[in-house]
Image 1 (cartoon, one colour):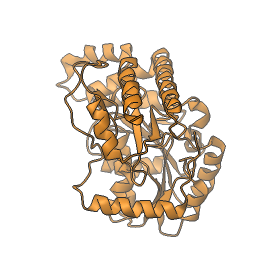
Image 2: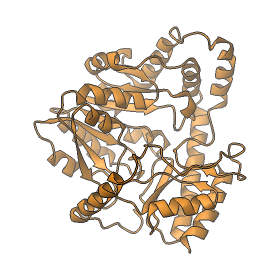
Image 3: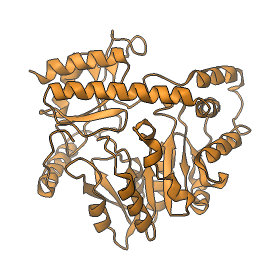
Image 4: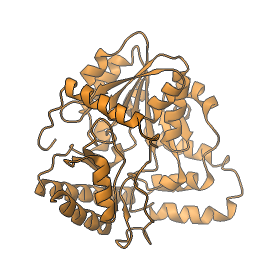
Length: 378
């Protein structure tokens, strides 16, 4: 991380307590809460406020996916049941596992939710990090389980040793978002692999790889090989990020067949027709995926250059967003950026002077860079 962050455990707990007290006095915060503003006139338009808070792919789906979805428009009155097995087969072949290892979901969020509901009913503990993505852990908490939040290390990465130290007979799952949301940091692959092999002997491990396909080296960092090798590991993926299909809500989990079998009854329904055909076409368009990843990296690097210019600390990012220190309360920073036509992400306690900004189009990022120079220099 640029300009190493010093955040010891005492400081973390002190900050967490203050943050929780503040949130307790405020209205309940939605996971997607952000300052409201009119939508921009068109994607990438610098005219209206630019939306840089949801970690979407601003470049949209592949041309093959768009064409496939357009061809299916006359059939949207039909269920996708005849097409979903073809997508499952295609995914299974891509991931190198039998089809009974794959569970489709309405975005990877449904996989997180159902996994959390199933294990949460056992009313034990789930180990995760703070700040981190909370959908699975919140689902477990709603079912009566307890969330054990472990502070990130000084580089704002998962502290695997500290997480392992929290395992007790009550632990029902360990959740790791890699790259982490909101920090964008990635766990060294060899260390994560060794951790998963050892821990999964007694506790299920859930690896959320929603952003890993945006990383510099996806193949070296994915943990799907552990699923192939029979370890008690689940890996989640989504078509919402790199593939640009956030509006179609389609994702999947790769897991052991026994886990897949118990999760399926908890699924809320069917994925949608256009999402299925868009996902299938996306998997066939490797050239577009490579180009989208390169454009996201270019936007990420350009944003980091601005932060360096302004002397700001940031977490080393591998997703399609950057997390950095603003030097002021995030609520104030959000409003100042909105005044400059940029919508940034919600607060992530306990780091309430840090901000996550998603990578947008070059036009959107030009607006963002200008806003940062103005807001952070005053």
